[in-house]
Amino acid sequence: MNRMPKLRFKEYSGEWEEHELGDIAKFSKGKGIAKFDIHEDGAIECIRYGELYTHYNETINNIVSRTNLNSKELVLSQYNDIIIPASGESQIDIATASCVLKDGVALGGDLNIIKTKQNGVFLSYYLNNKKKLDIAKLAQGISVVHLYSSQLRTLTLNLPNDDEQQKIASFLSAVDSKIDRLTRKKELLEQYKKGVMQKIFSQELRFKADDGSEFSEWEEKNGNLLFESISNKDHNSDLPILAITQEHGAIPRDMIDYQVSVTDKSVETYKIVEIGDFVISLRSFQGGIEYSNYKGICSPAYVILRKRIELNNQFYKHYFKTEKYIKLMNKNIEGIRDGKMISYKQFSDILLPLPSHEEQTKIANFLSAIDTKIDLVAKQLDEVKNFKKGLLQQMFV
Image 1 (cartoon, rainbow, N blue to C red):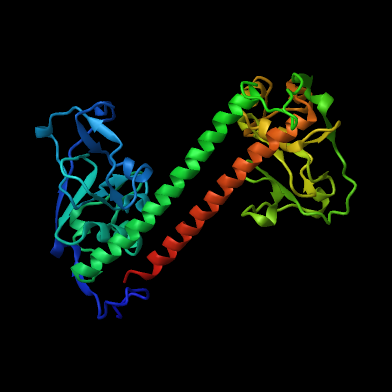
Image 2 (cartoon, rainbow, N blue to C red; image 1 turned 120 degrees about the vertical axis):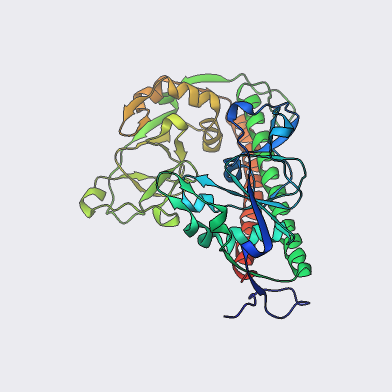
């Protein structure tokens, strides 16, 4: 077997050495920390096994939980400890390794603790990626799976020297730091947009005309006075079938992973959706009035909305996603299948804001500019994540 990685820093050469994890590490278990033992102002930082899936990646530095339990009754970490769940719901979930970069952190009872003189950060990346499936196969159980130190000891590893381990660990940590920064930037932009939308649609924040004058007061109109229900089925089934999604709006099915088979006969009954239409989705109670940037057809189960008067569609695209409007919809929902949807009549009963068209446009342009920034950061984030994925596939043996 060739024990040389496909992708490697140029200053290193030669094969990596084969080891069993039991030969380079010592094993122990954490001590139970119950949910009611967690306190925001606790004196001791702590990690419970479920948090490995939700809060941490390969390195743990910023701890999210604290406890007031007596430190003498706890198992406390040492810098470079690796933790892997000892039990969990699935074999893949349980095969999750993280390196604790702090002394004195209380480690929960459902955690395997691995102490080694090897680089713990390197090993966590290595175990989480190259060895994840091997670890998963070691786990035993059905409804709850368990992973014991006796099993982990038998895991075969290929390791470079200490210097190369450090180089790889530092590089991957830097990539993760960039991912964290972009994730935080995206979250802050989304929080900013949410806050400014609340101020705009409550009219706490108002725009002015280009000449500096105040816009007229907003009116309120019932939904049916602004939008009509459209049911045009005059097509030859040659238009793309649209999926109505909360993430992408109304979008051709072949642009996303959306596999639903339909017959030629059923497609004949589908409704035409024009660019600029809104579609009330089957999950409208979650804010599912979706905008379409595409012309296509959709199931007759959907209600299609088209503006009756001169309106800025982008203004209402943003308004339909506000917490205020979603709460109004939730008062008017009816049960359907596994979800809930609002009918055109119920949509019509809800009052919609009607600023002047010029103010609609200013608001829409402002919020769309924020969306453009969010989309740019999201694209950068995806690129870095894909870059990391490619690295992890090639940097280990």
